[in-house]
Length: 240
View 1 (cartoon, rainbow, N blue to C red):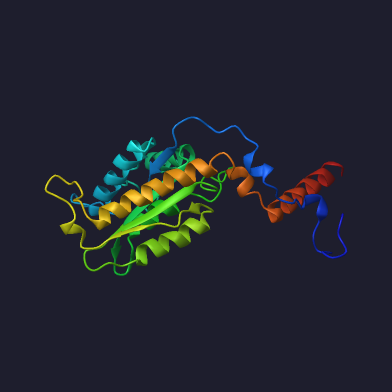
View 2: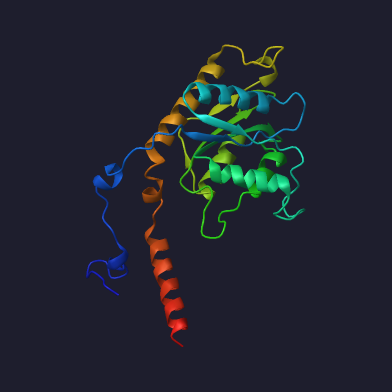
């Protein structure tokens, strides 16, 4: 193992310095950014989290994105059905397809809903050699029936980090959501709506900035070391 006297615990053959060329030496993709407006966390017919997700969809499309929405109806509880269940496969296929996500949940009993969490739980951290969410962008939003709160978006931020996603700084929390939509389900003009526009703009910008270099951004020393050790074990086993 190649080491350095000042850093004896670092394997220098796997240790790389970062320079600006690593972030600029690529040809930018020209296709529309692909967003899966993933999880709205309510199955109610009058779902304000779904209405907010639809507003986000319209904005993302106007900003040049390609958008697909996952309907959580008929998705089984985690571990209550095989991974081959059609709704589970649909969710996982969309996760692989997209370059960025929007998660939108009501706040219920001071937390995101179980419906929201169930959808996230069906997305694995890895599928074979593929990490389906790693390096993808994420925006989080919530709706509340009462005063403004941030419990659900804070929880979703933790989950986004756990799923190794690039969660953008901005977020949306819509208080008294029943007052913010008209009779046809469109969001009324307000500071809350302006914040949703801000969040979607930021999501598009972060996605365009990172999608072509996400593999570099998420390339970790510890994983390179682990991969090298695993390769060494396989080679040694093959020689026995």
